[in-house]
Image (cartoon, rainbow, N blue to C red; front, side, top):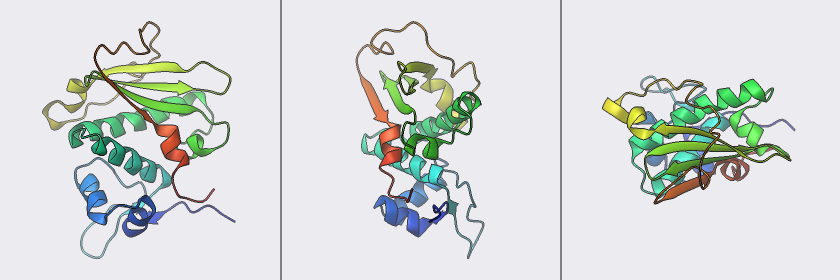
Amino acid sequence: MSRRQEWSLSEAARLLEQPQHRLIYLCEKGVIVPDLGDAEGRGSSRRFSTRNLLEFALALKLRELTIPVGTVAAIVHVLRGFEKTVAAHLDGFGLAEGLRKSGGPDLRIIISDGECLYFTLGLPNQRPKLFGGIDFRELTSRGKRRRVSRRDLRAVEKFGGPEGSRYARVEIDVTRLAKDLPVGR
């Protein structure tokens, strides 16, 4: 049996158990960019990939935590850049599929003190590494997203607890979100 790789807006809403208007809002705000086709006028429809479903799940979870939509968009944008960085080191890695497979990496997002974005990536039988330290002000300034460079996503060698949060941290388990997606294997 082959795995389904494409979903319409109504199918995505049903799978994620969310009203369509919530997903439309995330698309219209630029948080989610449909991988397989955007709506281009009357009668056309958005088509979403498995990665888009994971991005929706992440964005919805962050919105539940009352994180502003501009910040959520920046996090999803940086996550896509991080996927490319990981794929350069792990042959054939794709965000949703790579996290869903047995023995895949453990990926988490950490928002430190509401100011900095980090990723932790744990490979099987290895201690997780911390990446990032990207300042949200740079990501969300003047409504424009700057390009994320490999330098931004370098491993952080020196940190305390694990990323040095002083007052608060929010940690999202992206691997768990990917594994909990209600799509066939």
